Image (cartoon, rainbow, N blue to C red):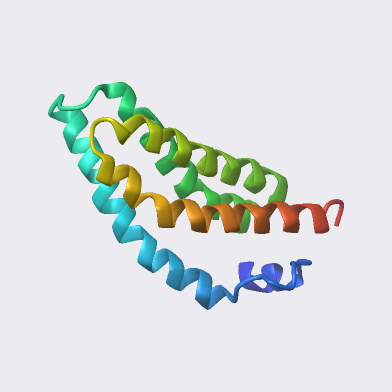
Length: 133
């Protein structure tokens, strides 16, 4: 069964966005993430911001990247739920960490935070609705 066939068999809340909508949202967010994260990593490399500021950005990046293989490769909803909670929490952490250095980077995370908040509720709902299936 393909990952899309598997996804279609899952119980989902009625408000679940269509896969094309989810893809479009990520197409908008990824350039924001690339620019803002890249800026933080370059500033860290140049020692313009402390290394500890980049830690939540690095954790977020790894957690974001591994979500799809966990969700659609392993098809592990509980592990994907834990992963998305890490993504969500690190957005808050990284915004707080960068605020005093480069406020624009923290503000740039607002659309990312809003979307991941929605996606987190969706993931937790799907995990609960499909628990034991």
